[in-house]
Length: 258
Image (cartoon, rainbow, N blue to C red; front, side, top):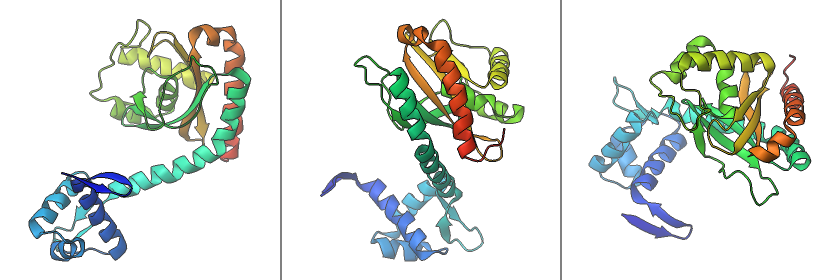
């Protein structure tokens, strides 16, 4: 059922679930089902159904000894991503604007999530013909520039965990579909400091990407510049040089000493 509000439409079950989370956050401690249902104005059976779903997803934790509920670690994980991405975007976007001004192509910042990349910010190309993308959008990591960068700096164990059970779907004739070949390619990316996606995910699209490292030398995000292959090819060597140099500059702002 949908209900109308001044800010637009709300899905009732989602709004109720958020109320539970907000109540647990405000209480600061574990709380019983009875107290939660009373606080949000719902029956115990409805509240229990909602909490059970939130618990299954990791957003709520139940203490088995007391039966009481508290916020789950999933919220902490999401909060860390949001906090980190705010800092990454603030420091990185000014550099990407310069890159876009110089080359006229679209630039992205992305992070890794379960074998996919999430685009957390972008600076659009001024051209009418440009890459179509959305902030918050997802793409496979193994065949995109930013994705390959983020995979390249994982340990072997981390990479195996991320890629476990994942089929390397062939999007174009250039897509890497062998896990062993991908591992070798990622090693080369780590050695040269950047990744090149030449129509691996989409015909007609070329991308150059590089890592953003923190004070411990860990890769916390990746950035890229992408555009139509014909335009990118005209200045590809210069773009690669500038992207690698910008990677060092941005990483230094995060305290990286490499």
